Length: 115
Image (cartoon, rainbow, N blue to C red):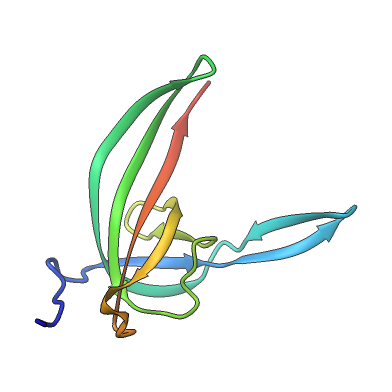
């Protein structure tokens, strides 16, 4: 089997925002810090998808991120692109490519809109 090689260079810097969980009145609340670990990655966007949900017009920006594999990179984390200061949430599972703990690939989305 041929070894995986990323299609694009890791030239975008992101911050990995990990959640902290606290209990308030019996409910688990997830909060994110403003800063986190800096990671280099390739960040490919596909434009926005316009949707209408419950009479609210939203634009969902989606992107695919490839980066070095990290054990603390989970589906409940968020990332912040430092060039734009835009925050994205990871949806789905983080893929460990070829199970070699070398490269990771995942999808992110930023929800905007509504008045």
